[in-house]
Image (cartoon, rainbow, N blue to C red; front, side):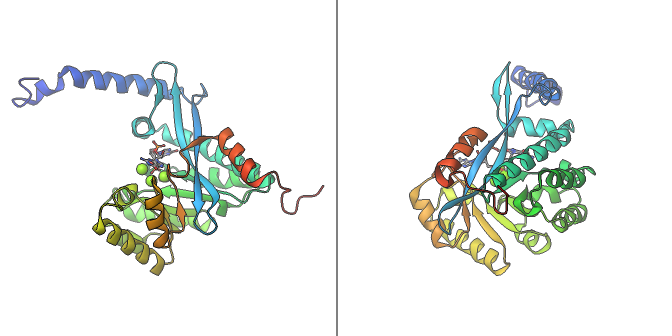
Length: 287
Ligand code: C2E
Ligand code: MG
Ligand code: MG
Ligand code: MG
């Protein structure tokens, strides 16, 4: 450690670094069998529509529970899954789960939408669109009920390619949301060029609203810009009543955050909806 500044070779042998690497290698090996071991699951974070303050859907967030290390956070295992290409089969599984959930909700008469996250690696997957279409067809849910969240990082490698892929997904009826908006580079240009339905304003813009007049001015400008471009807006990470009031005053369409609900298990989410909406007959269902 002492000679770290001197030569790169020494840095490689820093004990804490090799420990980190070893942990990553262990996680990578476990991740290869996570799907077949049924260690992956979905958490659902309710999305609240500001018209009527009702739950209008959920975002599906991956969870990985390991025997060796307990729950591993998505910020840790998703980059590994991307590096190993495992995000592709995991993504296919997730799409099928998503379609099943939508089918179940719609059969109960709940008109909910579901959002899933897609990384750059998944956009390059030739099978993504067919898997999406087949899953939705089998479940009978409309593609419009599934929203695909991407971040600006998908544009880093090949922006034209990413734009074309998003367009194809949107042409197939899926909704596209730009996630973590405001955290990447030159976000404004993306708003002009990308085929988008929704912008999710990153929680870093929400967390300091109460203390920061500049933060409020920024949120207000983003909201105005999205309105002018006919883009729906979601505020991420709303944690307090004061933040909710400020967000609502800006005409934001949807809110997600701990103030309402954290990510829930599928069971807890369904119980919540049952208590709110009850069991209704599916529209148009016979008997
Ligand atoms: P994200 O898509 O921006 O998801 C929102 C994250 O914010 C979630 O963290 C959620 O638990 C957290 N969050 C929600 N409300 C609040 C709040 O009020 N305050 C705070 N402080 N945090 C809040 P999570 O579940 O740890 O996921 C982290 C990231 O991992 C996600 O960010 C997403 O980029 C990625 N991720 C999760 N699931 C998937 C997936 O299936 N595929 C891909 N490619 N990425 C995923
Ligand atoms: Mg997201
Ligand atoms: Mg986000
Ligand atoms: Mg995020």
